[in-house]
Amino acid sequence: MNDRFLRACRREPVDRTPVWLMRQAGRYLPEYRALRAKHDFLEMTRAPELAAEVTLQPVRRFGMDAAILFADILTPIAGAGYEVAFSPGPVMARPVRSEADLALLLRFDPEEAVPETLETIRLLRRELDVPLIGFAGAPFTLACYLVDGKGTKDFALTRGLLYRDPDFGRRLLDALAASLVAYGLAQVRAGAQALQVFDTWGGLLGEREYEEFNVPVLRRVFAELRPAGVPLIYYMNGPARLDVAGSLGADVVGIDWRTCMAGARRALEGVAAVQGNLDPLALLAPEEVVRERVRDVLRRAGPGPGHVFNVGHGIHKDTPPESVAVLVEAVRRGAAE
Ligand code: CP3
Image (cartoon, rainbow, N blue to C red; front, side, top):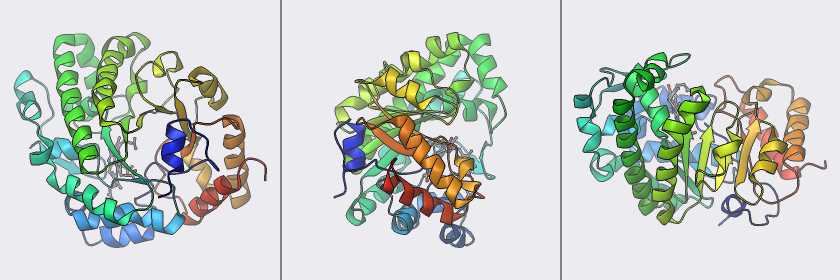
């Protein structure tokens, strides 16, 4: 098996920087759209053969160094019995606003809630010769969708809740943390070889709220996932909290394009690998610019071990697939070319 992704996560030497891309499976790929024309998104995530096929599409086409399970951060929430629609982002039929709304979450059992996702992982492990990344939404990021009910600019209801009713906010985050851990451990038992925790909206929290609400919950999550024995990745969108990122317990810290790569490498040296951080919109540029930007990221990351090449946020749906091929080829060639 090609294990340079896992080796880089552990900060071991590699022959070249490994590459995979957030949202590498998705709407920018014609072969995804062809399947999607025939099936609803949720239906695709719940059909192991289809979900496995979509996971494999970018690996086959581009030769990525890792595959990421095709599902959504809301998949376990839907599986727990909350009504979630996608249009295209998640929309909750009844947002979570009170203690009673936590009942389904507190009963979450991955084998019952998401058997199809676990089956998808088992199917994929038979097909793949690169590592399979499982994932889950971080508690605060999931809370954003549960409380606000859909994607919004600043998730004002969720952030407001933490000020208005911090006790309920904490119970909500604790319930999400417990389900995240159960879900992550189940993915690893099914065959996932790394786990990424997506805290996409964690960067919306104020400095103090991030420390009071997010840091303790994330530390617990990573400590409880640790016995799974696979590399753990923490991803947050927005300028990274490099003062605390290294203390959360993740092996890899994913940074976005606004975060200084060299600064992140210095701050996390000897502590965690760094994943990132090309601006996904750079893929809309002409080929030679894509190549140059890839080399720039590689140079900023430097030659030391522990860099996983990625975009700083998911690939945009208008990305030409050819640009992704150019990116992957440029990572293979390295910083010097
Ligand atoms: O390729 C992969 O990265 C694996 C699959 C994956 C999806 N969603 C598939 C998807 C992963 C890892 C996610 C995570 C996810 N989902 C996050 C965290 C990462 C991030 O991008 O910030 C978040 C915030 C969501 C919530 C979500 N789901 C949004 C905002 C959207 C719509 C917008 C978009 O980017 O496409 C979705 C729907 C969704 N999830 C699609 C896919 C392929 C598109 C659905 C369609 O085909 O209509």
